[in-house]
Image 1: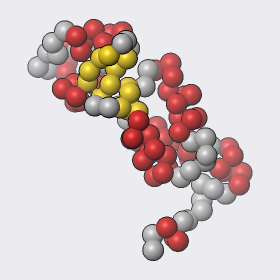
Image 2: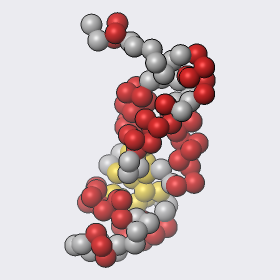
Image 3: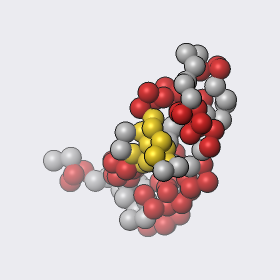
Image 4: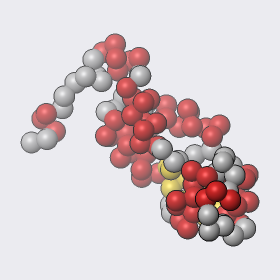
Length: 112
């Protein structure tokens, strides 16, 4: 996260290849990133530090909502590159949801 903060404070280069591989996934949204009090934001959403990603996913999926609901919940407050795929993987491998059949339930009543 320190490298990302430093890159935001300094000017981003024009080419993604000139950026450290560690922060390159943020290059596409570089103009939307800011820092405040040692935290990085994309708009009003907090960028999830690498060390907090698993804990954040656990919190997002704490109520064992489906992937779409978890994604909507996350998109309101947090950001990380590839977040939607990470949520999909996390929800699909949730042992609680798998053992109770929540992963395979179709909420057709929601689509009405």
